Length: 364
Image 1 (cartoon, rainbow, N blue to C red):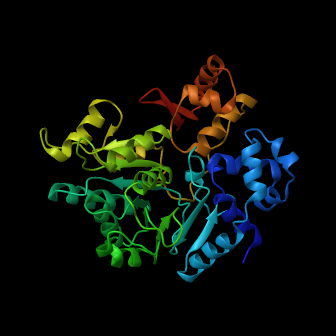
Image 2: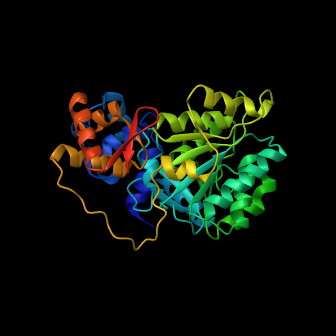
């Protein structure tokens, strides 16, 4: 048992600390163990830490509970991945409200080269199911990992299609990994672990209560390069996932449907309000996500000479994977927005960056 991992779990159990607070504390102290070992005086010097939080940290003794959680994960064969672990999903780590700890069962890679979330209504039509099958088949040909939520309808269709194509798929659960919901999908949850995984931020034993599903949706959105909404009513979990993905500056695609059909209302509205790009085929993903579908042994691109600012912008776009708006680029690089525009233009001339729909910029 890793002592530091137990301390990391214990830190999560202190009321009021939260995800951001945990990262702040560990950043200043160096590790979770050092947070608990720090004096109250040292804790109070950390921005955002007041008397109440410092007292809670010094007075808390959540270590037995943390050990019990670790042991319960071990018992069901689950890995406990803290955000400092190299196997923690890198895309998810970029989300501002990402969980600090996730639990994983399965052989699947949580940091695949390409990943797409496929979501939709629980009451999928035959049209929606067939479109989902086509999407997954096309993604499989490009070695894309499919992410969804194991729910009825479009979600489970995406997982089943992935299994049929023998391509990795990741299922994000709302409850503990030992509480598969819905239970009728347990066999699929077990099958997909051979090449994929089931994942949750909930500790083992947690019931999949309704309030956990919106939080689950942010993990689906956060682990994917983009989200495709296949079918959705005017309100529902799929639209929540789409909105979260958009807030993370990830691309959202929607499959258009029949005007007036209940489960086309959500997707058609996403397209009409320009909150999603229209999905007509896998070529849309290849273009908007700048996927290189040539052989891996192709001749490397010769990099032209870049200024320090241009290098910073290029590295940011490379790390982010998805196109970004100019104001977000300015904020992330700390370069004045008027200068960012000039540097982006220079990078376009050097054929490294291209402007994209929605006033966003991505790599060529």
